[in-house]
Amino acid sequence: MTELHVRHPPSAPTAAGAMGRALAGGLIMAVALGVGNGLGPVLADITGAGGLAARLIAAAIVTVMAVPFVLRLAHSRTVGFGSPGASLRAFLTGVGVTAAGAVLVLGAGTAMGLLVWQQLDLVTLVGFLVTNTAVAFLLEALPEETTLRGYTWTSLRGRFGPALAVLGTTAVFMIVPGTSTLVTAGIARLAGDDPGHIGIAPEGQHPVDYLILLAIFSLTLIAARAALGRAPLWAAIGTHLTVLTVNRIMLQGADRDTGVTVEQASGDVVLLVPLYLVVVAIAFLACRRVTRRHSATAFAAAVNADLPAELDPRGSGLVRTKRLRAPEAPPLFTGWRIPSAVLCGAVVYCGYLIYLGVAHSSVLIIGAVLGLFPSSWAQ
Image (cartoon, rainbow, N blue to C red):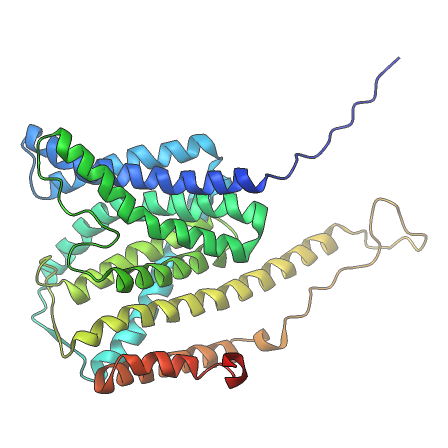
């Protein structure tokens, strides 16, 4: 007698298991970053490497420790990787959207006199772009996105849904830098070196300001990751890499020998960074709407193409005889005009916030943002 075997679907992950995997993603990144920053200089001294070679050693350690570890825990496509073609398109989308948002906001700041671009050395700039891309990709963009917006995000998204996944991924992202400094200090002590700075923010930066910037940065990266359907993690990697490049040119041009000297008219110019990140996040949300609309239309067309030309009036238990129509787009996103108007409005409002912060006080920015919400919410 033949036994009937019923295959049950896999059980949903438990809340504790999902949170444990999410924290594991952050821990992997923190340990890898700490080991890279601590062990990299030691190996550079042993090998006699200096300059770019020394930086690449530290960066390679981080990627080699973090990325293969995550890919042993989860499938590459589950994390968010994809085929070479889809990966390239997603990466270029992340770079293009982020660069466009930065140009809009920084261009507005330049027009208002907040930034003055001087002494452009094209050869030095190209050299900086090449070296910075190599180091930043291996040290930060690839390993951080793989561990955080890849493993941590998917672990929380599968159990708690998008809202809590956004909050959880952002929280884990914010504790990684401080935790990595502990690892770096430990390795430095073992090597007999100065342990260096230990803290949740880089030396010289206010912890609260730094954590706020990290939170906004995380939301932008999650928006990039959620914007595309194929190889979405590469969109976040492209965004991450572009943000690092833009910030270093604008804020640290002279220190990093970028080939561009940028004079800042006020200390509040740093507010341009979170403002352009907000614009980029809005653009990715609009891109997500368009992508989902296109995917639904393509699915309906594929189903209709497989239906017989003559529909069976009696119907069928296996084939649906009613042709599918693409779902109607929400009224707000029937075309590009309204999303473009919303994006332009966001840019204008960001310019207004920049004016308030520079011409008056950065405290007024908080009041301007709170003024967007109904007064009854504060009661």
